[in-house]
Image (cartoon, rainbow, N blue to C red; front, top):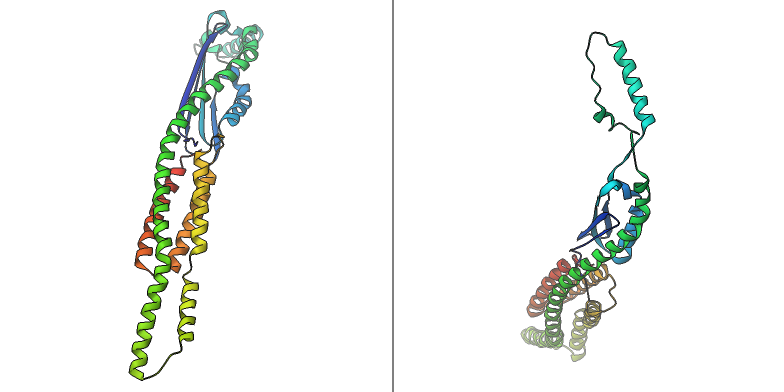
Amino acid sequence: MIRSMTGYGDASIQTDGVSYHVELRSVNNRYFKSTIRLPEVVDALEAELESVLRRRLHRGSIVLTVKMKVEGEMAASRVNDAALLAYLEHLETIQSRIHDQEARIDLTQLLSLPGVLEPSQDQLTLLDRARPVLSKLVDEAADRLIIMRVKEGDLVADDLRHQLQEIRTRMDLIAQRGPVVVEEYHQRLRSRVEELLARAELKLGEVDLIREIALYAERSDISEELSRMAGHLDQFTALIDGRDGEAVGRTLDFIAQEMLREANTIASKSNDAAISRAVVEVKAAIDRIKEQVQNVE
């Protein structure tokens, strides 16, 4: 079972006068990358929530957004009277020095100055109350995101299996064609040599002809490449059919690269049009596989 890297999940709850809403979005990324957006009052939980994400998701670019709505008296901040009076005294001192201008002090603007508004006692305890709630909501959102990832992963897996079958079919044709190519070379070489020798009225020993055929067969032998390709195909299939939920995207990408290497070696050893055509089709299927596994976790 493989998972896509794209998905969405959310979770909400209202408890103790606070409404929480968590959203998770993920898209492709070579590694795990998280972006966490939290309200200021729970900003200290960023590392803990990232740990939850890393435990549930192994790969992809993840965006976690948390929204909170605090109701009632809990939403009100406390005014620091001492800080506000200090600002007022300072402004009045400045105003007394300006005799030719009219200076107006707006108390509402003073509230935005640093240190004037402070968290209330309820807000100070909100962080501790929000910790288990947000951890649970992130887990629930991750569950929903993973469900979507699995559904998309099933579609990707179906296409990968189709491409693997195409490769197996072409590799069977290549395996059947290999011995025929050597025999055809044998016949062509014998006919050509006999033709040339007949004109020159010369004779060539059977041993010399067999030696030349053997050298050609050795140079064009692709049995090792066929065996390794079969092993890669079996390993690839086992990974996409696995049920352990592990992240296999990068492993699949590596195996696809090795499959491409074997196909290129077969093409370089082959001097046969039918095998060359089959290799081109194999490489096209591998390219499609490499595109698909870029979206696999």
